[in-house]
Length: 326
Ligand code: SD4
Image (cartoon, rainbow, N blue to C red; front, side, top):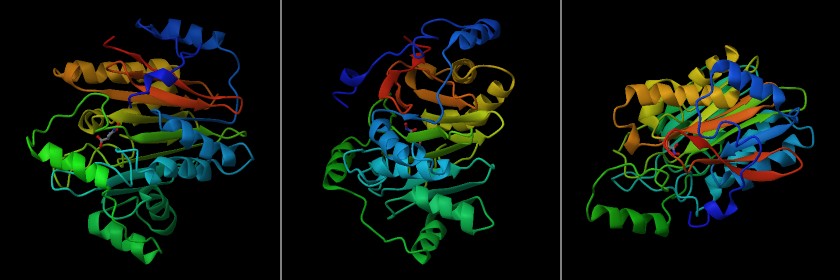
């Protein structure tokens, strides 16, 4: 994370909603002045969104299915041991167990999810199989593991020496407090739009580091960590899952876009909903990222420091989200 900020570029789009509350009318007027958005397009959360977008683009940019693109994209940080908030190498819970949450949603509104899954490096692919091969939306814990193993996934130790060392360090005080923008919660959430205007999304995480054993966050909850409606757009979340679940955040952002709000404004309104409800908002981070059917995107977070990666075929760059607390 030390070099996160050195990579950050502020784009024209990113500066649209910086530092002021826009009324619905103003935000709409601003969105009309934006240049025509490109399709296809892929966006994802945090620094690890850059390599994830590259992998997604290989499929999206060559006319592949948008669902395949988002799955391939988020598999990159899932397999990267240096990303300590997703998949292999993710920080464990307070008992030293790496437990993973993931979900995926396609352009037809189909969705699949796994939660509290252990020992499987690619929970996103298990979530996709839940969607495609079962009558259910969500499998958790041992049931999800059995399903994965029955479908050819390999059981692996996901606790890397680095994550184990960090956990043992944490055990010395064993104090649980989510740390804003620090590695203990940096989910990858990805949204993509293909050339013909179809949307899909994926979200995968090891959740909050040092969480209680059995804790599930927003990331595998359809409507909280991710939501895609092919008529309108998609949205996804990062940050403290409990705060996102309480407002069913991603579904809220999509519904706000349905009412005519541009993506950045819809994300901002959802953050303001959290701020209104959570007296302790100064101590927590939540960021929303959204993409509409026209290829317009936007983001907003409670605290500064949330960034996201946008790949439009010409460039793949990191952008700072605007935030409520400057
Ligand atoms: C969770 N929302 O488990 C996830 C963590 C996260 O950025 O998003 N981190 O609460």
